[in-house]
Length: 390
Image (cartoon, rainbow, N blue to C red; front, top):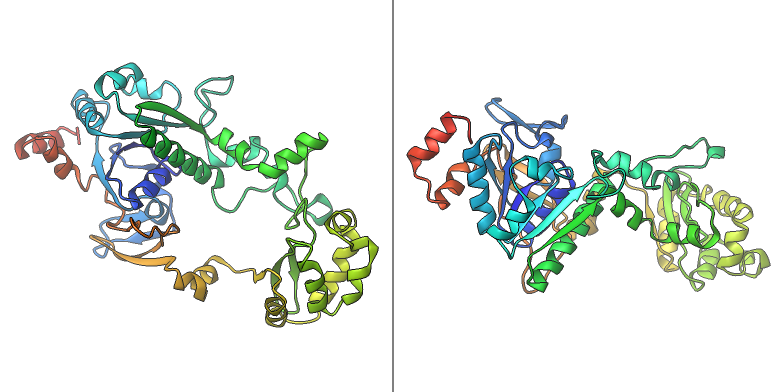
């Protein structure tokens, strides 16, 4: 698999496939993937000769790095050889950018008819915005996601982005799905995914709500637009998340809170009524939750089998026993950086398990190895290095 992408969507896509066993060659420009410099925080080399941003380390494990200056014809020739040997090409050039870099779509089919080519762009290959650069933050804005994220104006809120680059991540995952489907079909083809379309696709129920009633959903903070109660509540010493996802859970919640009289209150008889009367219900629940600490409420809700959980920060989330039991934090050895912590594998396959086999590469770390596989001898490789080709 050949990766000509940088930043997040493409690298995340290729890392998922690498975790699942793909041999990914990451072709980087002379200065490297821009995320190598997206710091702080940094991971410093022991001899302090270099450093790598945590951002780069997050999405580039299990890959080999080849540094190529695509402004040089020799580098383009190397690239064509790699294309001819690859099953998959992942790139995130703007429309027309791959051709300007020396790789023509028509020739791709001639050189490798079986190639699955994933093109990731900001807005897709056609349409009035096709030529614009794509960034996650902008996609969240123009794709409507920010309009449903954040607290209401009455609560002092404003449209907000999701705390991770969710448009990039979902684009990468949809690209992965497309690649796997194309490989399963066994037909060489082009796949287009964009940040805008991926963002629109992830709106799911919020978009359907708008389609049905013709109104923009708006922001509700941590509250759910279609389910009540389904949000966060402040307790006597913190905050917990509560999700009453079925009618069976509603009376169990009332009993756990000592508010049994709410079960027979016609204002809250079912979810439809609770959604319509959320403004009356929420203060009743909020006052009760504020009367005791989180541990007491979580214990009571567990006994009642009502879904709930503590609002953790990122460090707490990975330290919790369940995350540790499921190996969602792993430590791997880096050849220059030493031991680094990584997010574990979220997919557990019983027969063909995903693995973390190698640390995120240094820039051009595998250039000699990869070129050797293309039958370049050491003298030729040394010459190309001295001339700035690699």
